[in-house]
Image (cartoon, rainbow, N blue to C red):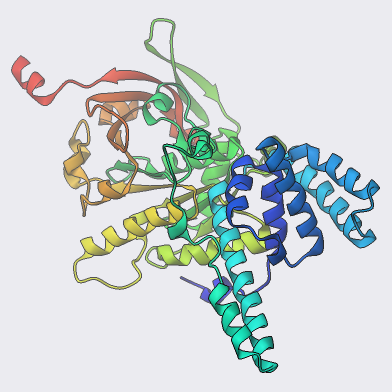
Length: 475
């Protein structure tokens, strides 16, 4: 990874306590989970302790997070003389900023990831507090008291203690059916086939070389961004200028600025389900148009956004991404809901393996772990083998290098296209696997597209592919 020193971990104190009370105010599930292991006295900031107690009191009364009601609770505490002047000023500033970020802008809140971060912070605080008290007793010669403190230490929120009673715990039952992990869905028939894309998912597009995999990953990024998600796109194939130009092309729906022929043929479904084509004359990408469109989109998506990291192929490993994510979080307060890698086979494993297939397997396994640990959607692409260049549809056995890729993903989709379909701006998307759902290897979705204006998806409809033996029988 180039300029590795720029991505080293920084031992800088973050606003962890602010994040903790933010979650307690705005998110029901976060407040329920943290109430199990939070010891308010472990919070270092006085105003954070006051706000945390307000939230816990509200939870006991209503079984919900206070959200906007925290303002009324603050005013009651202020008028009742329960807040010092300095605390009141800090709480008022915090609530004003919180309202701006989460209420008016509707920021997506990653509950599971924030809980894990809070658990780690509180564990550190508990250990530091225990160590400090033990040292104090030792310095005073009170060894018995020091040992009592050690014996009474309780680990805070350890993961292996997080067992759920799925029959008797009503909170567990209710939270299971809260769809806070859903991010977005593709439109039309394609969205029906792919289903909702969720936090923790690991999806992949498979196709032979030059079939448009990068365009589909970019489309996933655009669709997620427009749904208000924060997206990190990791580019391992193109120069940073080339990938930026492609994104601008997709955002504007324009032809590249160097294209001489600016006439494009855009497919559409007519009233009878047939495919028609409209000729349109495009202007080409213009810099000021890109600038104006960017501002317009940012107003629409509010706190959503897109960041692109361009690296040389083989210069980055999944473990490096944790450092990138930490720095994005600290320096830009950018915590991705979606991470897209173009593409996983160009990454390196943490150590070298004699069999290249083992290295690829480890990379895909580690990316699946990243999606789970960061509680985000992760998308990538994979080549299919050479035989699929002239094949009508890709099958599970066509996955290149290592079939174990299919074990690590939650969903894998095939990008199918004959030479004739390519000329007609048609693609077929099929399913190679969806974890936890019934699917058919024969079902495909026909997709209309026009890559000349950066659009791999315009519209879609269901089609059913005939089995091989049925084709042979007819012959």
